[in-house]
Length: 236
Image 1: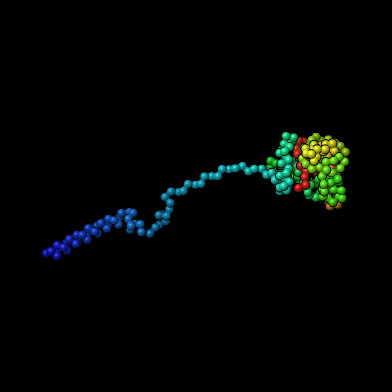
Image 2: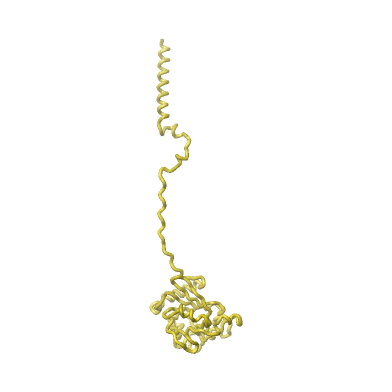
């Protein structure tokens, strides 16, 4: 009789434990639930991540170092423009004469400092700067009657008509070219600065120190220069 009572008690305990286990398996978050296979839905984030904030638009700075002008020369020209700023009324464009280049190269660069665009022209140097007529400037001079090209910053002045036709006076702003007005160093055109000189001689002729450009280029040069702008002449 006792054995039968024990058997009934064991069956009741077994049924109770089975009920508890069934309830446990039905509850989310239990060990059994955690071990089920993950699906793509489980791997999906609970919420979409926020989009990155748009980067602020920064206006592009104008180009001030066009490829045609060597960087060292461009830096010197801009430094001269800052130095002589009070005497240069118009600072939107500058002309740079690269006297390290041969006269056969378009080395007179007119640079628009707003857009970065530039135009380049042939220009002659003075006979006193190249006595052997090699096509390369050998020296600068500020001395009267030297017939040499001067180094430094000039500011363009008024136009006039002289022995070379329409010309433009220049005022020297540095100790290396402050005799420019007295020496009549100007911008003018000349036959010996025309492009066909390169076909026949391989170089331009020489001036008496003036910036002589080709006859067909003068109108464009004057249109870009105007008065009150800087010309920078250097050999870097």
